[in-house]
Image 1 (cartoon, one colour):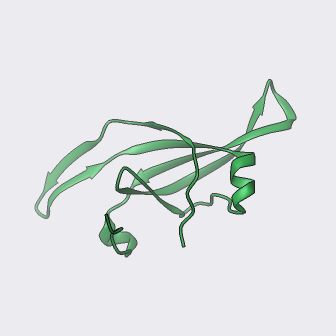
Image 2 (spheres, rainbow, N blue to C red):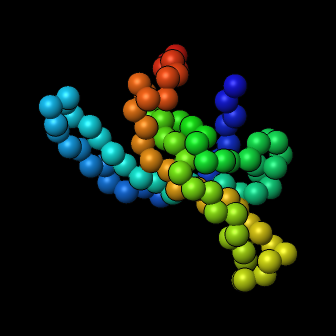
Length: 98
């Protein structure tokens, strides 16, 4: 079951390559999630988690948990996740009904 939440997303431009199997598109993004918002939902991002943004699916590669405000360790503000665009055939999930 999925969970919706607000976040800040920074993305690279999509890069398309073509080989004998057809065209493949790759894109990396950085996802920043406020720690308090995600705590209310009761879920925490982990490597391998999949999320949808603009009808594309991305898989989290790395989670950084030490984004401190003004360098103060007692104010840990957010999770910062690095993710990449996933092929739907690789993650084996059904498309969302529109």
